[in-house]
Image 1: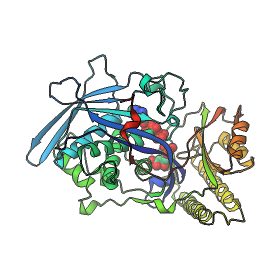
Image 2: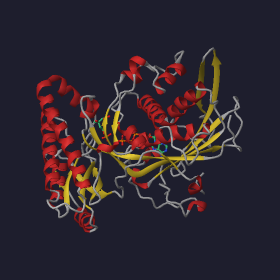
Image 3: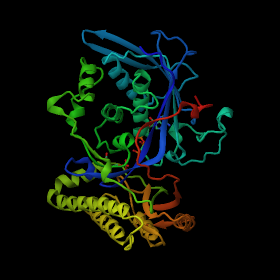
Image 4: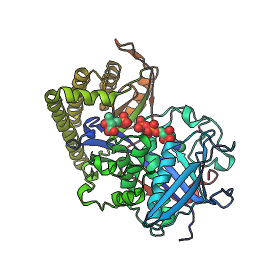
Length: 462
Ligand SMILES: Nc1ncnc2c1ncn2[C@@H]1O[C@H](COP(=O)(O)OP(=O)(O)OP(=O)(O)O)[C@@H](O)[C@H]1O
Ligand SMILES: C[C@@](O)(CCOP(=O)(O)O)CC(=O)O
């Protein structure tokens, strides 16, 4: 077992700019941008930790939040060629959080099981620290930081994690990806700070853990973006993960290992992550706006998929047209990036493609009766698009009332004007939904995916 020192890893957030819902189907793709808002995970040996009845323990802390430190006892039982790892949260000690953190617990279980199976041994007494960049949550960040951390880039959010208002950048996918990567890096000498992380292993394991934690197999675009950054994403066939089964059933470690290492000949990983297909020219900036709106949109995915089942023909026509929009969007962004500096016809082509995509999305909204681009958001997007320098924008991901993503000229003025004009923005649609506040987030598009970080930058937090 290698004598390990601390390691740190970060993974980016995401925004699905085009292909929401379609990306659930392997026949289609989604355009996802990675963001420069990252979730960081630092892992070090926990020498001062308490002993447990099993002798090994993991403390996971999220020190930016109140009451966010989860204490786990780890067990490892070997039988024949299988190994069963147990991760049990200790909930009867007042200094640790009593509520479960499903994403953390499941990721520990999956990654430690994988490591135990491939004979890396579980180095159990660990202290794991999670740190998130500001834009994942939209509450004020005015609380004081720990004294020793006053020079760092991280904020204390001053609230419990469950009370934080998420901005939808995919915190769970970035967290799971970072945690998987940091645990693998900690247990494997091959990935020093300089060397490359094993992206395929991380991707497959993170998809497995993320799906298990959320209790369903989604498209996985958020995990792919956390691992690989911006890409044109085609999902994997769901049975690849469904075959792994429950952690409580015999043979789980073997099935997980065969899935993660892609050894199942009849269930090979078929995910396609085309990073090279996505570029944003230097002359454009991605701007994300968090929209403070009272409306809830439960069950959107279920309702859209039901409409697609009921009205297969009209849905196929619409989805094929939307797919064409996504392809054209990628091609136009690439064309603009490659002709940077010599461009004469500006962003009109791009603006038209975005408008076409939006009108198809509104048609889907009307036909499925799901507010993917609801009227209040239409009004907001039209207003933004009318401002100088704003090329266009969409309701990203599943759409709804929470956010808009814009492409604007990267000239300094545009963002400034946008910020001023959105200050105090109010609107109301005929369903009664009302936008109270539109906040520009500080995030930018960033191509890169998961990466090792210098451990020194977390001083005061870990
Ligand atoms: N900083 C953090 N520390 C610990 N756990 C976190 C942290 N951020 C997120 N999580 C975990 O991720 C969960 C939130 O995941 P969820 O999928 O609901 O949100 P999201 O991924 O940010 O949302 P979206 O998919 O809309 O972008 C939390 O309940 C917690 O388990
Ligand atoms: C509707 C869907 O296609 C996108 C959801 O994206 P977001 O969570 O709203 O960013 C669901 C999925 O792909 O898992």
